[in-house]
Structure formats: C-alpha cells, structure tokens
Figure (tube, rainbow, N blue to C red):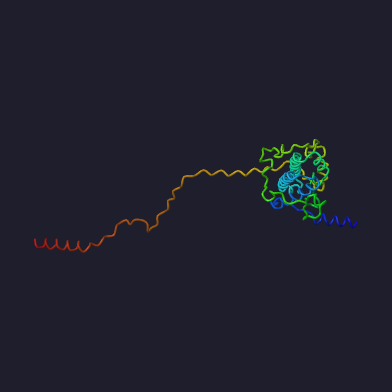
Length: 259
C-alpha cells in the first residue's frame, strides 16, 4: 500500500502537461531527459547519443502541436501522432544496432513514450525515472543550437541517418501505424480518450480567399444650387467717377462755355 501511494504521488508530481505552444527550451529538456535514459540503458556511443537526441527533439517538437487535438478526441490528430512516432522509430532504426533496437522495442517508455491519463498527456519515462533533475551524461554538444536541421522535411522526406552506421540493423517489424498492433497500442496509450464522430479527416487549413475589389465607378459631378449671394446682380451698380475724370469733365465743360 505504501509503495502504491508513493508511486501515485510520483506520477501526480511528474505529470507533464504540454500545450501546443511548447517552447524550444522545453522541447530540448524533454528530449535530453529521454535521450539520457536511452543512452544509459542501451549503452549508446557518443555519436549515437548525439543522433538520438536530434531524433527525439524532432519527434517532441512535431507532436507538441498535435496533442491538444488528441486530447479533444480528434482521430486525425491521433493517427498523425502515430505517423510521427513511426518516423521517429524508423530514424532510430538506422542509428541503433540490432541488439539495442530489440531492447528499445521491449521498453514501452522508449518505444511508445507518450500516454494519456486524467485528461493530460505525459511521458512514460517519468514513471520509471522519478528524479527529473538527474542526468547520467552531459548535454549533447549541439543541445542549444539544434533546431530540426536533420528532420525529414528538410531532406526530401528521407531519413538523414540512413547510411551513417554500418553495424547490423534490426530486421523485424517496428511500425505501429500500419501494423496489426495499432489498435491495441492506441488502447494502451490513449484508451481514456473518446474519439469524436466524423473526426478522421483533418480540417482544411486553406487560407481564406481575398475579397474581389469592387469595380471603380466614374466620379459623379455634384451640382450644388447657387445661393442668392452667389448670384450675379441683374444690373451692375453705377461706379463713381474718379477725381481725374471729374477734373477732365470740368475742364471740357469750361472750354465749351468759352467757345
């Protein structure tokens, strides 16, 4: 009973509530913690450690924007999550040797790292490793600089890690999305989620079309009625003669009288 209480408190304390807006620092921290424990259990080499960190980083960064929709019961988001998981596990297939990958598949906290409980999604690794501040190895050299440069969309959707290692690879089936264990894995990982009817198709995120510009109209000339004060007077008022004109008239009159 005491052990159960301790485990329950640990799970409660280690719950990782993640949102679509997961920061880069949070992605790095989660990727490092998961990679550190994989390196400890699978005995990774230095090169493998660096590559596994990149793969885990890309996976966590990709699912961060999906999990809110998964929690809402959107089936398309759940299917896309397993697509991301298969890509991650396929990349790891080209990094780990046959023995390491066999161990990897048997460890659910590595092979299927995410689950839902109590309306929240969490990483299984925290159920096994309860001290979140303990790391067996230092940060990868590119811990603060890697931002998805080796993700598949940047390499024509082909694994960047294919051909980098020349050891024996795992030859069994490891895909979940198109395998016979897909539905059982879904029940184990997300069994508490009730899928929404008709949610298997992802929404269409097309940008809204711009409204068409209205045809330009010729400017209408506005004729304003003239006010009375603006109207020209019917008869111009008489103008008073200037002084020069008066003098000229007086001179001409005097000349006429003399004549």
